[in-house]
Length: 70
Image (cartoon, rainbow, N blue to C red):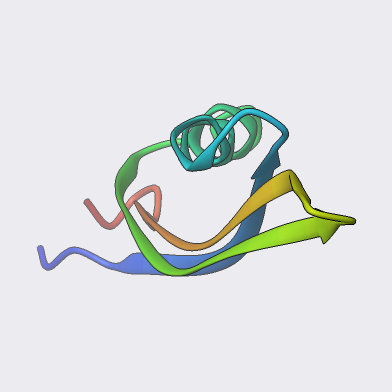
């Protein structure tokens, strides 16, 4: 049987840094998606207010195996 993998795109964010934003992607997606195989980070961006970075954001593509096709 061949594997079927689905990909979804999400944005993670954090006030502390890119690392925490990336980890939040896996933490939140894993609440509703099982069989996560990998996460690919495409873009990194920051929200700035005045002269300060106030939020870090990552665009992520999460791939996971489709049940019954693994």
